[in-house]
Length: 417
Image 1 (cartoon, rainbow, N blue to C red):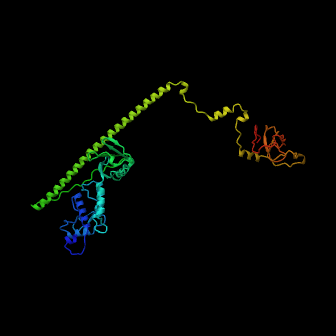
Image 2: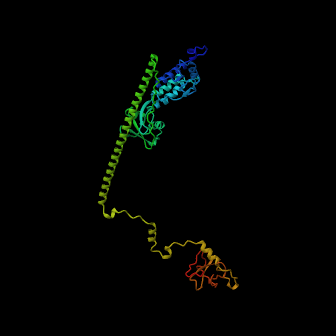
Image 3: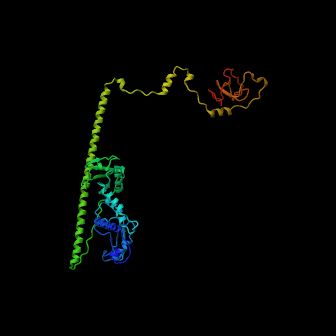
């Protein structure tokens, strides 16, 4: 359409409703920033060929293209400039709409149905003003009325990089506690002068207000009414921009003071609550002590904790001595030493063969008559059994205690080894 209307070139192309969407996108951008989205050097009217190149070669997703120098390259951008008067939150919702209606490829361009659906979604959102105290930034959070506090905190994390567990909210000098399932329509009413204060439990860097410092144009010394009118228009725009910037800075300064006072008041309130809770606990302690003093003395001290070992000893006090102590634990090393000290087997004579009616197995226990041993129990590995020290034969025990386990350890009174 620009080629046919401005460049006066004949072609057989047809135009649909997308040309109107393009015009709407240019109007939106111009109203938000005060300048046209596509600007060749010396302006679109003086440099029509570059203007046609910009609008036909625009990459997908870009919303502006500017040529700052003659025959220079075109600088594309997908975001609004710093001089845009819209908040960053609203820009994040508007830029995708502009990118899809300012589309050079007609097949990728949105239709009116999708355009109205997206713009209606933005219009039906409510605005919650939040001031990040440490970062000194004011945010306009656009959310639906049915959105929960959890989603609200996630949006704050996206813009402030403060995680939800570290977010402390204040409203009118008091701590604001939001239920995770609480809907946004029940949030307190906010405005630019009375927003929700956001404080972080961790250290964050200060961001402040982003603004563009305008540079005045160079004024020609010669007298020219046309140039003077253009200069006056530029100066008026710069003065208006500086006035809005200074007003925003004053609002931010006042919000910082208000937030600090709110933190101090909230700290005093929390200290008073802790003090009152401490006083209540002290009064309850005094009442408990007063009630305890009314009981007899033997009921005041706590009952002793029973000792299982002491109880077991008390129960076995009337038992014989050999039943009180536990059985000794066998020592495998002592058994091996005892077995290795045994003498070589002695040949058994026929007269020394024991009575077959009374069997004696290897490992039976005999009593040593050696004077250096006192009632010593030794295992017998050969027949007849002998003392490992004096090699004297050992008389076998009676038939009653005939067989004892091999692991019985000798009770040495005066060791021979």
